[in-house]
Length: 534
Image 1 (tube, rainbow, N blue to C red):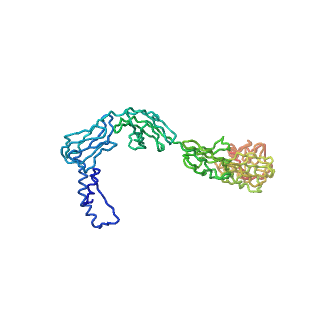
Image 2 (image 1 turned 90 degrees about the horizontal axis):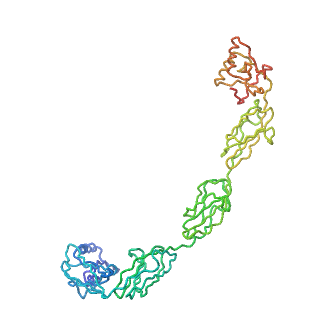
């Protein structure tokens, strides 16, 4: 703070303000060692003034006695005035005044042009706190009539940010008007104020922005003001231009993919866009949609469901509050899903000679395969096939109908949801089933004789033990273990075991199946057919 000259009283003399001044100079550089001492010496005065503002002061508000409008008036404290002190005026927007003053009794004189001066005596000020004295000044003449707003109508909505025509009635006795347009209904944030009006209409000079505005009018006659009009509001909803048309970026038009999963779709940012509508369709006329999403706020998208094999079409439309852009161009892409590889045949070995009319066929499991087809035929062209099964869900097959003796060709193919593989390479095998009835009745274990060991072998077989080592194709009964039939029933069952026991105890001799009795005692050995006659 300065301590020489009259600067220390300038602010108080002109503005009624006690000022704290920090001076900055590029020519007078203080010794930095002195700074802390200067601050300490001035702190006491600063603290005093801060505390002083909390007590022994005059305050209040000056208003028009008729309209209640705040007035910018001069407040004179008769016992504390000087020709060297400028007039102390109340604040124009609130009519308030504040004077720090010593405790005592004072006379206030409040005056304003156009109003009757008011003198208030005996105003007591003490240290218990501020003394509030509100003053209402009476106009020297009647105030103008309060304006009535006409247009724009209250709560109007406009799609134009340019000037509007404001209109109100002619107030009786008015020589001018004050229009206020604010950003809030309490008029703490003004958009525009004009007190120079002489006619009851106005056109704003600054374009409005989007939002809600509030306005009111006060009539005046010189320094005499009417009451304020009611407050009306209007809203500006400026419609933005329509967005620009999006430009598709990726995937490139005509792309081919071997993947059914999600892709990244991308397009340019549209000017003025707040969102996008993304469409994928099965046809280029977009009558059958695969996916549509209108919730996008960014210029990219990843499809939510995997694609099937086929062609797809996509496009994008931008939008904002004003509407939709033109649709983008239509781009196309194709999903070419891979079908499985052709299977590799494993069993039976190529060129196998089978002594059974029933065979097990096997091949590998190609990746992604879910079903299979097998064809077996005596012609390598498979036209037509003796056996053709397209319903297989596993990579194995066993023929249920016996194969006649001869050469056979076979191959297989695999499929998934996207189609069939080609056929595997062709293999062949020969069937050579012995047709002579060469066996010994009761010789279940293949020893060429019927003994008690065959009884034991039969019991073990029916308890889950090894199969008899030979069988015979015995029409019309098919292939079965004919040597085990000792009771002539043309089947091998537990009754045959009972018959064997009775025979070895002196019972009736074994009886072969009458449909295929033995012609010699040679054995037709078991060849691994899955036939199981239990």
